[in-house]
Image (cartoon, rainbow, N blue to C red; front, side):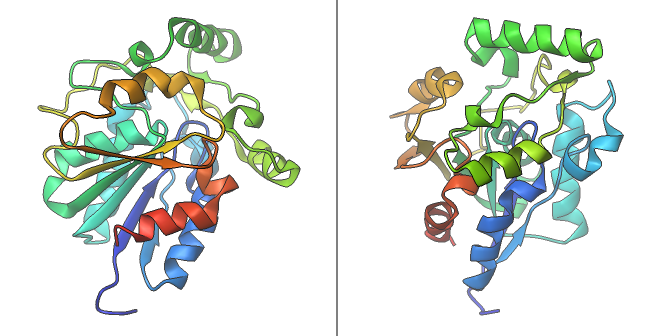
Length: 240
């Protein structure tokens, strides 16, 4: 590994797990960098830990724990989808360990807001109803993987086999960052536009052009790390 090697911590989104970053992590490692792909509590291979108590604080603690246990500094922290909310919380708690934030088609929630309120009302209502109907409000069942902008049947099958219910407590929890998103760190937003993920359009409009935010377009669907790993890795390597 070269002296200029960077450290990436890749945070997955709702219903996913660290597995979804596999292709991108392989490409980052091949370029001489370190890539950590932790799985959040209650998801992926940690689905057996799902409970009503698992919330956003749990997930922020998961990632802060990785930074501390692995003694990571100067980190490029990448958050995909819901993982953008987690990354925002990690930035607030472990600012000194992070060099840059990269939000990959990510949800963004300001201090004092909730994940549910940044979504279109019909989307939020549908997810809440699905959680109540499927688990009594413990978790939100995964959607059809086609919702993530994937086209290759093999990708759809691979993702579909691995999606797990997402802890519902994260959905209506009010976040407390103690300041603006990113805690003053450099921020890049990679906006996936082929196809767009409708639930995030209002979020992107809110931050596009805002001082302190760099927006770049990515010609890929929402799960770009699965459907377009070469291009996703290339973009991340620009920040190594």
